[in-house]
Amino acid sequence: MTCSDDRVDVGILFGGPSGEHEVSLMSAAAVWDAIDRDQFSPHAIPITRGGDWYYVKDPRPLFAEGIPDVVMDGRRIRLIPGKSGGLLLGDRLEPLHLDVIFPVLHGPFGEDGAVQGLLEILSIPYVGAGVAASGAAMDKLLMKRLFRASGLPIPDFLSVPSRDIIGREETISDHVSETFGFPCFVKPAALGSSLGVVKVTEREQLGPALRLAGGMDRKVIIEAAVVEVRELECSVLGNSELRVAGPGEVIPGGEFYDYQSKYWDDRTQLVIPASVPKAVAERSRQLACSAFRAVDASGLARVDLFYQEPTNRLLINEINTIPGFTKRSMYPRLWSADGMTFSELINELLNLARARFSKGDRAEEGSIGVTSEEAPGSVEEIGGTNG
View 1 (tube, one colour):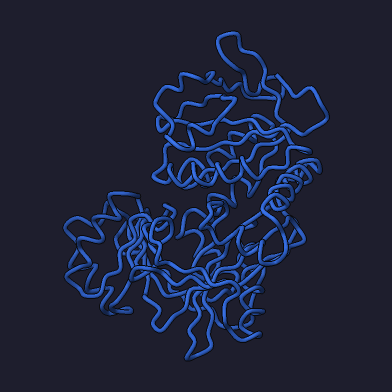
View 2 (spheres, helix red, strand yellow):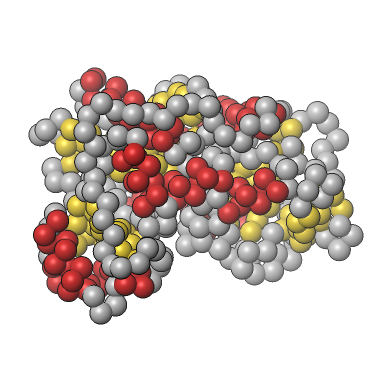
């Protein structure tokens, strides 16, 4: 099945088995509405929580009501590797031709390199970072090591394999106390949207936070809290040649920018542009480009930074290679403030994806961005085994 006109056929993947399933539905709804139908013909591919792929003509009920375990109004999709295979529909295995896929997926199996690897095997171009870059950006421990190797400024942190937590909470607490103390943040290494992130203000809270994060991922990061900090975000767009919008500032409704604050708390404020000195804004954009290149990203990314106003210092928090596209999301809002409409942004992302694959080049050519300042951020594994 293919479009009968000259428009580009775009598959929009959404849903999936990760804990960010609902966020994916909100992002996909915005993309579905904004895509330029004069140039592109959108095709909806919902993925159930169990990982089954379907094809539906009208995804809007799914955006509003959720994806059931069996999509009665949809046709199952089979995946056949190789150029002679691809996506096949229903029991008759009707070929579904797509020129490019937009994975509007968040979290594991969506932005961690898993679906990107599958699309590589299927030989279908897709929006965003490749397999290695997606995996490195999703795994915060790998990401931090790449940032440190590139000379980028990051907060101090420790890591511990989840299997080494039980029975060793006191030893780990001692190590945290000696290294950077409290408050600190405990995070699962490879989850997005701040799922499982806990701010620990005193020693007694560390054990429960470690067990929570350890139950969600096989590696846990303990990160020094940066005091007197403002949270800035930049939107990066491009392949080898990069453009950056921002920074904007996040003022969380809660104590910090957790999952609730990001998507549900109406008290959270996104200030665009951030009210910071011109030099700080320029430096944040430079660091965003360097972070993008450090993980070898492509297409798009949102880079989150900490700004210590008293010291005029900037630190990189993390990079997100498939940022949210909801009405509350910073990534499209920063581009809108820069003069690019949501529809124009979607067009640009799809064109960047097709351009990258038309060259037969899955890796970017940009050099790793290195800063001249000394990069803080200690990496020390607690426990005798690697996670």
